[in-house]
Image 1 (cartoon, rainbow, N blue to C red):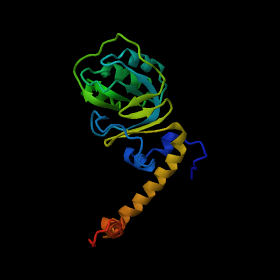
Image 2: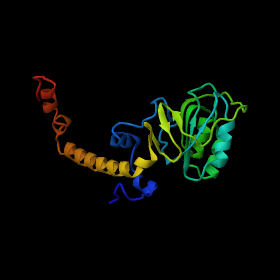
Image 3: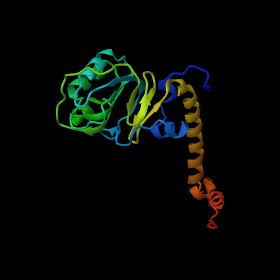
Image 4: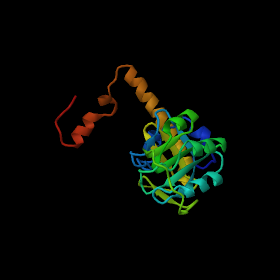
Length: 219
């Protein structure tokens, strides 16, 4: 079993880990604003963050990120939460997929959602907007950014699925892999007990919780 001190293969260690499981394993930390969602159901993203920041409605920096990001990385874009222009569309998604990038997370808008979905490229965004972006001002590349209320640094691990996006700080990746695996095993045992007829009230020992709260309610 992988320990927190050992280097890990992220693709293997986090292969089955959901965003929610990782969030819980981190002590309910790291979740981006719930408005940042996959543009279509069923999308999943897993990879290290390549960060950039774009002024509202301007995707010049994102074009640079597409050239600089390495295969397997997830481009994470701080876009000031501006949703009225699509910073990323089918053409850029085609380039990103051809270059082997793992996905895109943007605190802003994208467009061409149907075409991006058809390409099979995972995109998580705050909104979909038909309006095109401008190319006027260069933002920052490869610096820590705040996206969806969370600090994201280059090399952090990004996990996204239908429930949302969570970011794991690079230094915590091995430890959270272990904690996530333990949580998955615990939940598997929990589900098995429920299938045998136990209830969540019993499994979570909610009578004890009610007693702690000073309530006389018991089941």
